[in-house]
Image (cartoon, rainbow, N blue to C red; front, side, top):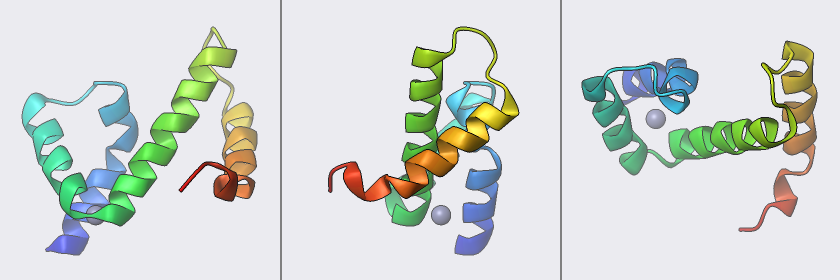
Length: 82
Ligand SMILES: [Zn+2]
């Protein structure tokens, strides 16, 4: 069951961050994140990525830009505190 919740949560990470999912699903994901550090980590990673992109790119970011940023952040992950 836990695994299923993880897959469900991660499948909706972008919709969650974009506020494109219903309140119920959002609440369910939120509840799952509280109990699941790996998912929480993935969500905060993606939301940080989105925040950076939003700051730098005013229009819709190109997929390759997202990929490059993601690779960059992964490489520098240790530099982000904790
Ligand atoms: Zn999980």
